[in-house]
Length: 362
Length: 125
Image (cartoon, rainbow over all chains, first blue to last red; front, side):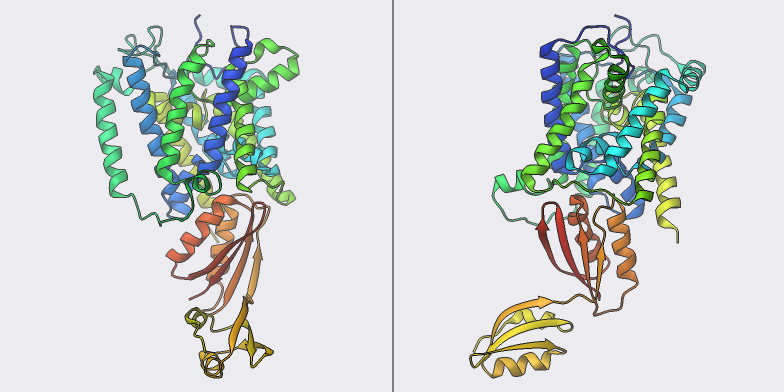
């Protein structure tokens, strides 16, 4: 099977009941953890400049480090084969920037928007509709020409993907462009990140309450959120690979296959990722209800339109770049993919520029 | 005769319900002197309620508007005033108290008033 990067629409294998269950279960766990941890990369990046707050950023870093170590251990044990996304720098730069802008307007990244639908936030639901729509339009509709143009004209490949990576991969990684064993890069990054986190760990106040209260009624501390999400990512990789989609967590492909299946009336289009994202909404709704944090609510009309436009941009950016904040930043950076690192960098630029213009002047 | 050390923080805009010599007395206290006199006369505090100077309702708003609007409002108010913020966004319920304290103000209380609804009381310093 030639195409194993699965943020594209369509699945070569027919979806089986065990695949549906697997996607749903991982999705429910993921959605539960996202809601409990208030895990949103939009907030994580934006609050660096807006509120000088680093708590969510620390959670993101922990999740990435745990995933990175976990994926490489599993690959060394032969449980999985790494599958970093291909590099088309033009698509990653432009898609990343558009995604970053969209995140701020939508009030959340792709995963943030998805889990907030489960909390009852109608504004995020509207953003999600925009996201689905533009994802399909950019993937296979009126805007698909832009995507293919950028992908083909700025594509960069390597001939030897290196150890631990699936042999058909041509994607540049931090390891294979230098020509070293990936574990060297992994260890260096892990040491640096753990060093920074330990130095900047900040004083978490002592909270009272039983363990059950802390898990189900209150927000999780950043280190717990990061670890749990990293573990869920580790579960996702082999679970998804068993269905023919050789990649860990993702969001964009899930929603675009969902809409495509509905439009075409074709269940063959559904993938493990489709059921993952449906599970995220369910898991977040569960977590919110238990914690007394579910409430159907909407902002005013101007804000709804803003979030819809944000959602449109999220979809365009994610499909041009072949991945969103989860597909690239949470799943791709731990695999040392250059495309994901470039994407992540420009997401932050787009996010900061928009946050500054929209929220920090006046 | 009992003393209530925490009352000393509620200098302005506080309504305290006292029982003095078996009569219910409702007072709007303007300074600490009144409290000292009351306590000297053997009055007992029944309940207290803080009346905010201003109220900011950002329920329904999407992240980060609850935080940004709260900060703007706080910056526009005078020391001693009390701001009540109503939000329904869980992350902001945890984050606003932290950022307000960093700005040097006092967070009097954070109450959950409903499903995904919080009331934060801030005293401007």
